[in-house]
Length: 262
Length: 249
Image (cartoon, rainbow over all chains, first blue to last red; front, side, top):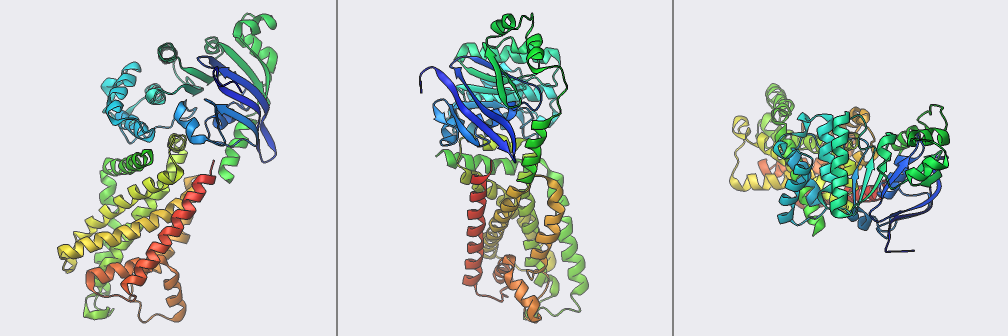
């Protein structure tokens, strides 16, 4: 494989949950420094793919490499290189903002003299530095999300996973969050792998993959997709490819049921 | 080195969370205090404790063990809360070995349990139990042995539990039997054989016996047997917990 230009390489990746195939033999690659969007209706397999790439879920078959390391064989080397902003909150609300970040820094074995300075940097970036001593319990949804972004960036990952990073936030917060992320990208040559339901947000991606029923249906730059499908917006392209029917949350519920059983 | 700091920060988190909820520190002393003063005082005239001591003195180490037992199990089961509130993902996706997550959690839970046990220890003068510095140090050691063993058990249970709904079942069918069969509340020397057998299967029996030996000089088994059983049980629990965490996705 090419070790110099690709941050993610996925080959025939498959994941089944008790007979239900959530991700069905997908293959793609993400280049270093790229913002890569993963779009699809509910239950298409987006979160399952992210969970496999960030080592929380083992693939049923196929391979995935992140920063040149096999996610199934060298999970700890992969974990060092990535930052993740999960779809659902994952903060300890009985700790202060600062303590949540300190916890993260120690878990990632950062140099203790560096941690303080980095905490200041990332909290300043997301405009929460003056709230650093507050318990997360007191934070609004938008502030929690900003804190999670700060945490995901703390250990200076090469690759950032964003699973619906702006879900449920007001337009002002969404705009700010994109500002932070793109600023970070510019300053640190960060690669970004994101999923979203907001099609205008997906316009910032260099390339997007459209996934449905566990398979990649198309993959290209937003502009190329728009001209290919003769649509003026990515939303139009999305609806043309995946149809207008409302989806049951098939994949999500299979995943949740499986989590409960095991 | 990374694993050492991971253990440290997991331990520190449990301590900070303990300190955050100061009301719970005192609230959770309510039940053991009821057992100690109401049950202890009420039964003292009618139950003959070995060694000619009062019944309330006799159960004092048992009630401390109970405090340690419940605090340990609650701390370990908080992993299930972490799973429900998403925080466990933050831990599982970090570049740390799974065994250091288990050890860090167990040390945090054990420290909190020993602190609760020490608060109970402060009641010794009210019960009439004489404590020297040496006895206090030995008691803390035994409390820690119990706490570490039980958090190990709690982590094994928590690794299999996906939601808190099942917790009441665990209390009724695991924790209460462990407590009642441990001899925390009764002398072990005049039991019918079926009950004697059950008490000997309960790992906490050996912890309670060791604590009673240290504090009151009364014990049914040798110090060495107690120590070996507690350490053996702890080792098995940790081996199972680490395997479970490595297999879990």
